[in-house]
Amino acid sequence: MPRLHAHVRSLSTRLAAAAILAVSAGTLSGCLVSGSSNQYISGSVVGKETFNKIEPGKTRAEWVEASLGAPDSKKTLDDGTEVWRWTYTKTKRSSGGVIFLVHSDDNVTTTGSTVVEIKDGIVTRAWQD
Image (spheres, rainbow, N blue to C red):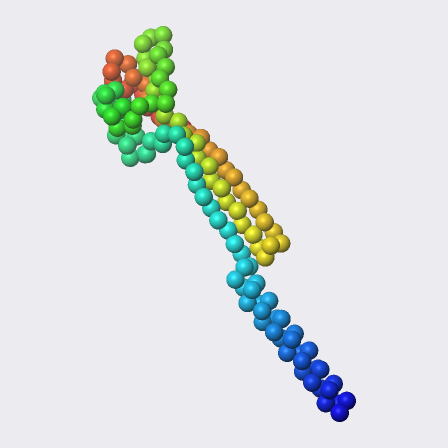
């Protein structure tokens, strides 16, 4: 009888080990890598397509404001030139992990603006940065 008991105990140990390995492999295969990415934009973003329609020497101030919306700021220079500015902030948040051993967070914030100079109601210069 002791020999059968040893055999059953050995078989039980092997089955338990196999079950643990199977569960572990199944659990880990679903969680090896995880990640997420979100982007947040605040302010006034002027798209390239709209911006490219502005023609210095031709485009009127009324069209600029109707197409881009009210600028975030306006400044008048000594020579009467108006500088209109639309600004935005873009934040991209990313995080990821590998089997809970390595985890990283990455936040990248960029700012940009569209600037239009207007004199006597006509655009003289426009640029984006």
